Structure formats: C-alpha cells, structure tokens
Length: 140
Image (cartoon, rainbow, N blue to C red; front, side, top):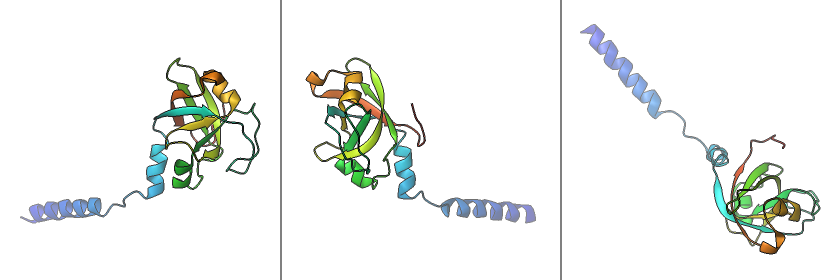
C-alpha cells in the first residue's frame, strides 16, 4: 500500500509542476514568428533616413516593413536581414530591414531599387513575394 501512495504522490507532484510551468511571454511568440514565411506584396521606394536611424541609398539592399508590423515589435527587427523571394520567377535577394512603410499592409515589404531589381523589374512596380527573417547577426 505504501508503494501505491508513493506513486500516487509522485504522479500528482509531476502533474502540478506541469500545470505550474511558465507560459511564454509575448517576446517569445514574436521570436517564433520570425522563423515563419510571410506572403505579401513587394514594392520599391527611394530610400533616405529610415525609421531605424540610418541613411541609405538606392544601391543598398534594404527594405521597409509595414508600419503596423514595425510598431507591433517596437522596431525590434531594425538591422535584421530578410530573405525575399519573387513568387513569379523564383528569384531571391537578402535585404536589411531599416525602415517602416506607412502605406504597406501588414506583410508587405517596400524595397530599395537595387533590392527590387535583384528579383524583378522596377517597371513592374508590384511583386507577389514571400519572405522570412534571418537569424539576428546573419549577414549575406
């Protein structure tokens, strides 16, 4: 009988510790989201001073994320690289997140002319893209 009570006590203790395990905070959820692939529209713009505090030129492979995405994570993706793929032709490019785009929908990216031209023609204006964040510290 003693062994049965000891086993029951052990089982209840394990169950209680599982229930008391910490729930991930919001930043953990955002970190997991960074590994996801997002679908959106790709457009281009003439860069200058970005929301992340740096100044870029047309020749830099940079992107601006939607203002709402930028605000959701408080600019936490500044200087992080993304991998962008043109869904129509399969071409891809790495670009650095340096700005926000007030006119973009949540998963849209606005690219510098050089980043856009690496996967499509500027005359197209809008591309169907998929993209994902690279690990922080990644450089192509």
